[in-house]
Length: 263
Image (tube, rainbow, N blue to C red; front, side, top):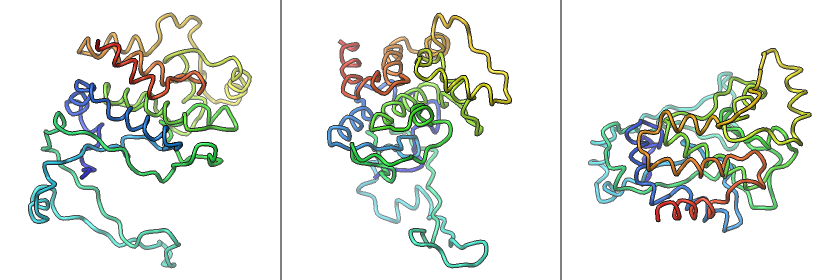
């Protein structure tokens, strides 16, 4: 059973609890499995990751409702009263919340919702992406592949640590890219011309650092990661969040990196 109320970014203690037990590396293992099966997930985010709640498997329906409350259901209708289109549900059900849940150290996680999924080599023309989680090649390149999952996995591991997204988005691509530059590395040379065009059209005065020196990610780790053993995740995030898909760590490589760091 995957509990929607237990999404991985719902609180700092819960998020840090997962990362401090990251030897189980569930998310990377899930991505490795998906990619080895010739599939891309296409929508890895906290909305599609949940803890399993195995302690509830043997509970009755009544006992489950005692914990989570009864489902809140609303009928879905069009504002103008016209019939719902094909594929739309007749009802909306509010996600259950369980603020008192404390079993994260004993549970694994599940990656679900393959609505944006695709077979490798049969990628769609576009992906529906949350603004703050947009993958850079979908802005700078005409094509993408399963390696969008690697960038998004890096974003998720970042959010587990810092309980926030690495970037914010208010509808302006150049502001999003500005935040990405220097987090791990400089913008690739082959993307510079398009970046300059974006800056020329922008209403914002976006000035990049002349010399990045230590990356923004390293500085953030130095200032905010309370447990020194978690610093090894810096190299994983750095490897997953490379601009060019061909430069990113695979999920298998990231797992190997964590394994070597623990030895």
